[in-house]
View 1 (tube, rainbow, N blue to C red):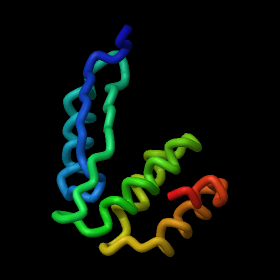
View 2: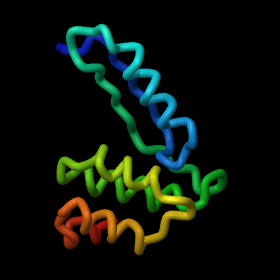
View 3: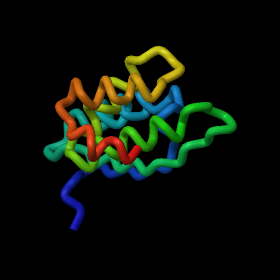
Length: 105
């Protein structure tokens, strides 16, 4: 059973510049809703179009396994491209993620 009044599913790469706008508009569209919107993102990195997309995707998924997807998402978007492994591990440390679990990225 769906508990959200607004639900959206999307397959996209986190390196897409339009993702923050998409999330912002989904939030604005649901501002009068009684329940929080449900935004389901599935990773679909496109290395050819966005070099580093796979690293970003894997970092976000590793954070999601520890309940910190959106926090990692925000840090990744705040970082000026290109995002490197060094950045990812710094972000994981900043978020208090288990680095050994995150090393699977």
